Length: 184
Image (cartoon, rainbow, N blue to C red; front, side):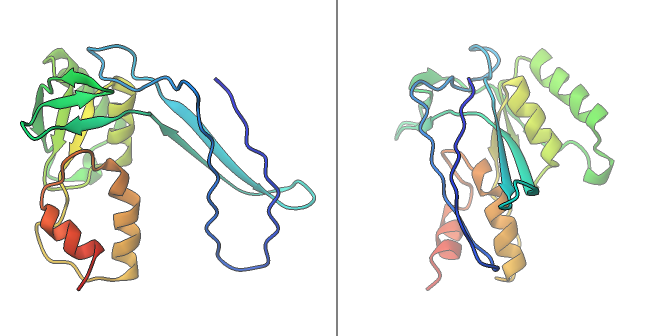
């Protein structure tokens, strides 16, 4: 399914945040490998000047899904009961060594073990790992990486904003998250 949003916006120099919304009538939903096809969308955003020359471009691949956990800890994926079969995941002590070949091997082993969900414990993994899980239909439960203390800086806030989309229906350390977002 292809769709396009064209919108002319005239800006003077400076920093801007622009929100464009496109509603998909009947999106194909991402699901785990054992329930169907983990459908992913490709989004490309281009910024052109008045001469139609490209100034910047960003691409992202994403899935559309809804995850709920009720008060009895029943999980639902896309409004259907879901039974996560998973494990904690710390691939190696040194993430700088964790390359695409190792990621591919781990994804293969996870599926061979009939695992449809992983909990990334006590760290933030490489982006390639999250992309591979999306493509393979493996749900990621990302621990919130606030086991230690952090300074509230612009750099920390930017990193937090970048990883926030990994947090699904439940966040370890929810009180810490609430304090960080709503400082008193």
